[in-house]
Length: 518
Image (cartoon, rainbow, N blue to C red; front, side, top):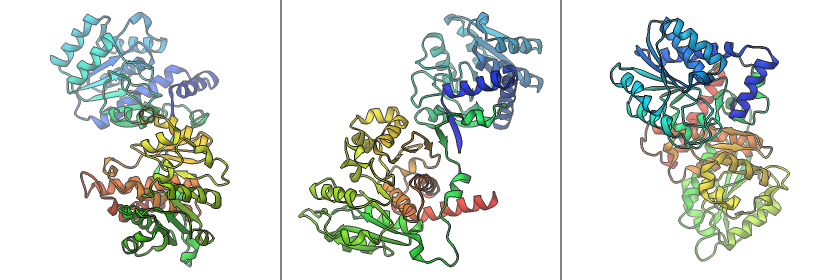
C-alpha cells in the first residue's frame, strides 16, 4: 500500500530526514531535480525547448536544479523566476546561482506587468514544454493577481505542462480545486503521493503522476500515515484461497435481503456477483411476488419468499429466523425500499444477526442520522454508500460530502464502528480507527444503474468466505473497479451492470496472475 501524505506529514518527513538523520536539504533537492529530468525525458522525448517557471521557495529550487541538468543534456532551457529574488530559500538560491553558472538564462518576473517576459517565451521562442515549479504544496487559498493571470496564460497556450510536486493552484492536502490553477499533463511528486494526486476533483488536473524517491526513508513516510493507495500486489495477497479438495460448504453462504416489485434486477445482479466471486451458496430473500423474477435471473442462487405488502415490498421479517442459522454473511439493501416493512425487517436483522453484515442503498437510508446503531456490533459492518446515502447517514448536505468525501467517510466509520466504502471516483474505504484507503481502479464506465448492487454482492461474497470486513471491502472495491475498466474496452460510454459479474472473473484472474509473477 502506498502512503498518501498531506502537507504537514510531508513536511515532517522532510524535517526528520534533514534534521534528525542529517541528510542535507540540498541533497534532497538534487535528487528531486534528477527525478524530474528523468521523468521529463521519458514522457516528453521530443521536447527540445523547455520553459521552467520557478518560484522563490524550494519548489523553485527544484526547477533551477532541473534546468541545470537539462541544459547539460543539450536542451534549450529558459527559467522565469516569478517572485522576489531576495526571498529565495537558501537551497533555491544556491541552485539559481549554479544554473546561471552553467549558462541557463534566468529572467525575473517581479510584478504584474512583467508577464510580457513569459508571453514572449511562449509566443516567440517558442517552448515545447512548460515545467511548473512555482509553488508546490504550499497553496491553501485561491491564486490571485499575477499568479492567477500567469497560470491562465500558460494554460491557454496549449503547451504540455510538467508539474513539480503539485500543480500550481492546488493544495497538496485537499481534494478540492480552490480556484485558478495550472493543469498538468504529468506531475512528478517526491517521496510519496499527496492527497490532491488521488482524490477528485483535484486529481483530475494532475495528469499522470510519477512518484520519485529522493532519499527520504520509508519509515519517515509511514510515521503517522493514515491514508494509503491500494496496490494490486497487496490486494492479491488478500484473495480467498481455494484448496483442490474443497467443496461448496467451505466457501460460505450469503443471504441477500433485498428487492421490491420492479427492482428484482438489483437482487439478481448482487447474487450473480456473489456466485462469480466464490460464495459457496447464495440465497435471495425477497418479497413473495418477486420470487419468479429473481429465480430465473440467477440460476445458481436459491430464493426464499418473504411476506409482501400490496405494493410488492417486504412487509416484515417473518421467515428470516429459519434462515439465519445457515448463513455465514448477510447483505441487505438493494431495491429494498424504505417503507414500514423494510424498516421492521432491518430492525429485526440488526437485533438478531451478529455475523458479517453488509448494508447498502436503502438499508443505509433507513439508518439516516443514526449510524451509531451499528457501533455495538462485535463484527464491524460494511457500509457501501454513494454520496447521497452517505449524506443522509450523517445528516448533512450532499455538497458537504462532495467537498470532503474522506472526512465524511472517516466520520461515518467512527460513528458506526463500521468499515465505510464511500463510493465514487477514487472510492474511499475507511476503518473505524481513522485509517483509510483509496481504491485506484474504476472509471466513469461504472456510472450506471446496478453497478453498486454488483459491488454489494462482491463484498458480501468475500465476507461469506471468511475475509475480515476491511479486507473484503478492499478486495471487493479493487475487483469491481477493475471489472469496470475491462468493460470499458467493450462499452465506451457505460458498462451495463449485468455484464460486470463476468468481468469480475477476469479481474480476479489478473490479480492471481500478477501475484504469481511477483
